Length: 308
View 1 (cartoon, helix red, strand yellow):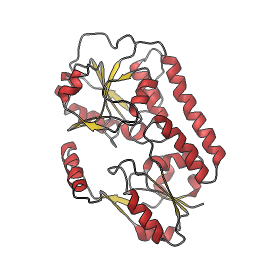
View 2: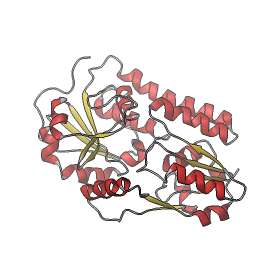
View 3: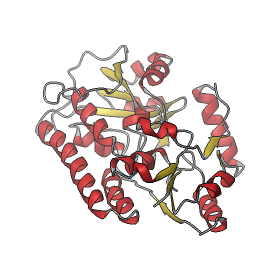
View 4: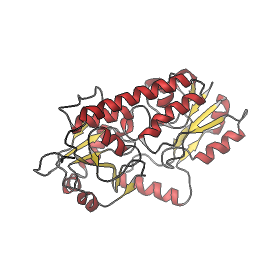
C-alpha cells in the first residue's frame, strides 16, 4: 500500500507500526523518525517565518476568520505519487491541511485513494488510533501490539506515582496570549501523578488571562508551546518570566512540545514519562534523550504539591 501522510503525528504512528516503507510522502513539518527526511513534501505553511508568538497567533486568527487556509497542498505531486491511502485530521484547523480540502482533492485523484482522519480528543483516543490506522493499512496485529506497548508504558508511570502527593499543574500551550493545554494533556498529567488545574481531558485548548492561571493556584507551570521544541520553548518562557512568576507556581519547566506533547502520536508516552520525572523525580527516572529545562521564575516558598 502507498500511503501519504498529511499530519506529523500520523507519520510517526505509521513508522511506529512498521509501515515506513509504505509511506510515499509527508508534510513540511514531518521530522521524525529521521527516515522521513528522504520523502517528498506535500504541504507548506502560508504563515511567514520569523514572526513572534503574538504575531503568529494574530496571523492565524486573521486568516481563519476570513475562512482562508493556513496550508497549501501540492495536488499535482500527490497525483504523481499514486497514493492508495491519505492520512489526515480534522481536529485542529491550525495543525494541518483542511480535512474537507483533502477529501475534495482525493476525489479528483486517479483511483480515488481512501482517506482516514485521525481526530483524537483524549489519550485513549490516541491509543485507539494506532489500532484504527493499522487496521485501515492492512496490519491490524501491529496496531494491537503498538497500542498495548504504549498503554503499558503510560500505566507504568501511573503505578509509580500512585499515592504520591499530586502537584497542581498549569500546562500552557502558548504564552502570548496564554492558552491552557487541553485534549490529551490533562490525562498525561494525571498519569504522571499531577493534577491539571486549567483543563480536563478531552477539552479543547483555550485562551485565558494570566490572572485566571494565578487564581487556579498551580504549584508547577509547564510551558509547552504547540509545535515548538525545547530550546524555543525555553526562549519563549524567558520572555514571560514575570507573568509565569506571577502565577504563584513554585517551579516551571519548558518542554519539547513538538516531540512529546502537541503531536497525538506514539511519543506521547515519552511525554508522560518526562512529566512523571519532572513532578516526581524520586519515583520516575529521567527519560533518555528528551529535551527540557527548568525555567528560573520567582516562585512561592511553599512545598511542591498538595496531598490528594
